[in-house]
Image (cartoon, rainbow, N blue to C red):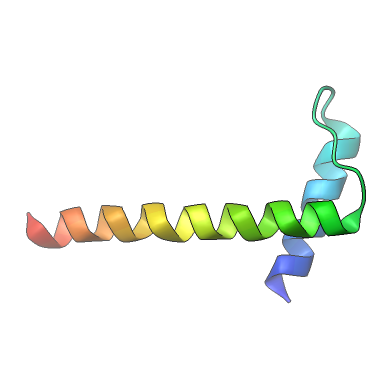
Length: 53
């Protein structure tokens, strides 16, 4: 469900931000999935560094 909410936010950002364009809900959903994956990987790397310190 959060992916769908993120997709709607991406679509809204596409309307509001000049130069940022997303064509359709499915493209926004795909972008949301990639954004979630990248965020999870980066968060995991940060946690691993904090635990090691």
